[in-house]
Amino acid sequence: MTPQETRAKAAPSRSRELRDTRGKLVRAAEQLFAAKGVVGVSLSEINRAAEQRNATALQYHFGDRTGLLRAVLDKHLPAVDARREVLLQQYEDSGTADLRSLATALVLPAAAKLADPDGGREFLQITAELLNRPEPRVELVLAEGPTLLAWRRLLEPLLTPDATAVLHTRVTAMRFCHAELAARAAARPRGDDRLFTSRLVDLVSALLAAPVSEQTARLLHERNVKDRTGRPAAAR
Image 1 (cartoon, rainbow, N blue to C red):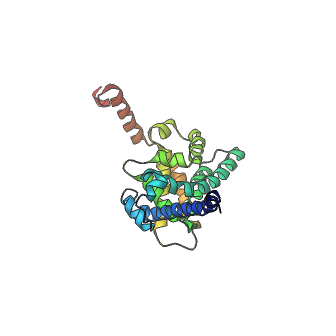
Image 2: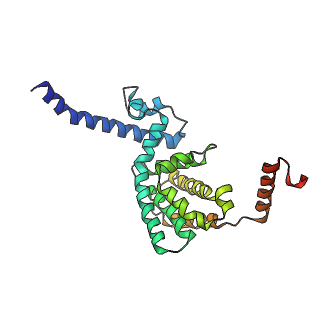
C-alpha cells in the first residue's frame, strides 16, 4: 500500500475520532455548565470530564469558552427554531393579531426540550442563565436562535412603544419563560409536562398583555425629564 493510500484509508477514521471527541466535549460542557454555571467551571474540568488526555483538545475544537457555549447552543437551537418557525408561519397565515399565539410560539418550542434526553434539560438551564445573569447574554441567544428575532418583530405591533423600546417587555417575557423552564428542567422529570406548559403560556400571555400602570407611566415620565434636563421633574 502506498503512503497516499494509507493516508486515504486513515482519513475517515480520523474524522470519526474528531467528531467523537467534539461530541464528548459538548456533552460534558452541557452537564457542567448546567450544574455549576457557565463561568463556574474551568475548561480543564470540562476536558477531564470528557476523558480527554490531550489538555488542548477543547481549545482545538472550540477555541475558548464562548466557542464551546456556541456549540452547545448550536446542538439544540435548530430543533427549537424549526418548531417556532412553524408556529410563527401559522400565526402569520391566520391574519389575526393574538398575543396568546405568540406566547405559545415562545414557550412550546423550548418546552419540547424537557423531553429531550440528549442534553435538552441542561440546555434549558444554560439558556436561562444566559438570559437572567446580571449582564445578560441576550445577543448570544438571539444570534444562535434567529426565529426569536422574527418573534420579536411580530410581537412589536401588539405592544406600546414604551413597552418595547423602554420597558423591554419582550426580553422580560423571554427571561421569565426560560427561568420557569429551567426550574422545571432542574427538577425530577415528570411523565407529562402539558399542564405546566399550558400554564406557562398563560403567564407569558399575561406578562405581554400587562398594561403600563399610572404609577409606572409617571415614574417613566420623571426619568425621561431628568434624562433631558438633568433635574427631577418636580424641580422644574
